[in-house]
Length: 347
Length: 125
Figure 1 (cartoon, chains in turn blue, green):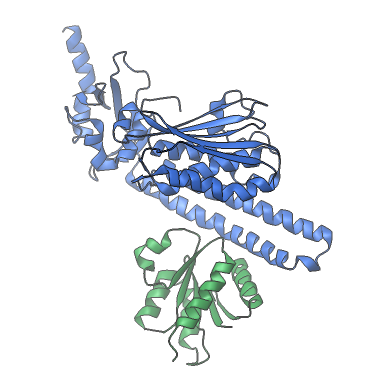
Figure 2: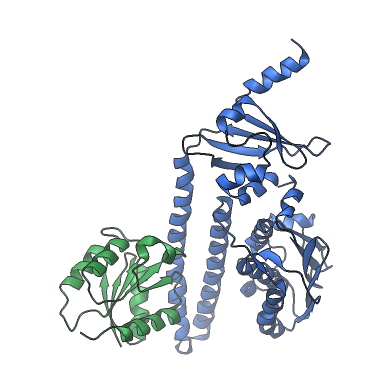
């Protein structure tokens, strides 16, 4: 047997499905296990065309980004775990693997049921906590100063807890692929102007300044307006809450030939992480200056990144202790083409 | 001022709802689950019974959707406000006939406003 025969035999007896994709993400080769486990993914199809109609394009994006995902191609086929090899051949090809983990669809369903159940379990006690502390606050004039103070701290922390529960639920829905985007073509100027305007009162109440610098004629982009609003709100809120009075916050928006670029910069304390990327993966909040303002912000950046990725964009930060922070969100002008720029990265 | 029936299995939430509604001047009756709520509605007098039902979405013993279905099929003229921990429930089929949705944690200003709108809109017997 020649070496080529050895390779052929090995490939066709590996029980995992193996696909070789060329730099255009077109399937150029698949092994025998792939034919059996994922028949619709045929040679000559690009991954989005092959898998998109079955699982939705968003899952394909996530696989391409290097995430391991579990899903079923068809009800009569096993649930497979899918993974792109991060170590890529030098010519830009990609290797995609899928194997049978023995996890059944039933187990996957149970995860969703868990999230729904957990959400109820967590939200009910929170409702009682918030509700009764609000009742006490309504009677605050008839409480002693210490009682009034205690009630306010209870109510504030209950709200903080509620925020974090909301964030956790959002995050777990997202990892199960249940966080959905409703994409439409929008004029981003409306949102990029509107969000700072609505946040200005609370920022100025803390003696911070907010400047907005938006280029004329920003290009229209494909986005979910609700999520875009959430992304910008979160970034401004972080700058507002994590920095002391006197901090200057700037929101700016420009466009390159490829992207819409939105920046939220502050000249405040900067983030205390060795690697700024950690800010997006760590639950640590860095420094806290005022309890009352840091509602749920620990998980906020992870969610922001998720939402930006759902738009096929990127979010990065330049920061350092004492150096302020600049968050940059890039959203592609051509959403469809942008799928080809997704590469497996460090997760 | 309205007569409100609450169907809620959690004692803390039941107490919370009763207190807030009484503070706003309403008269409140409590049911601990769906079965009790239906029994109370069935034995209610024609002109002095509850004018609106606050229905917890997740309850044991005759669940929320069953109560809702029963009320709508029997054509009892009582608006049903669903209270639930899960957002987006209003889009699910079994809750389509509800007259309104309130999610937890409860925004009481919104809840009290909904009660007022729904009880003033109902047709007089």
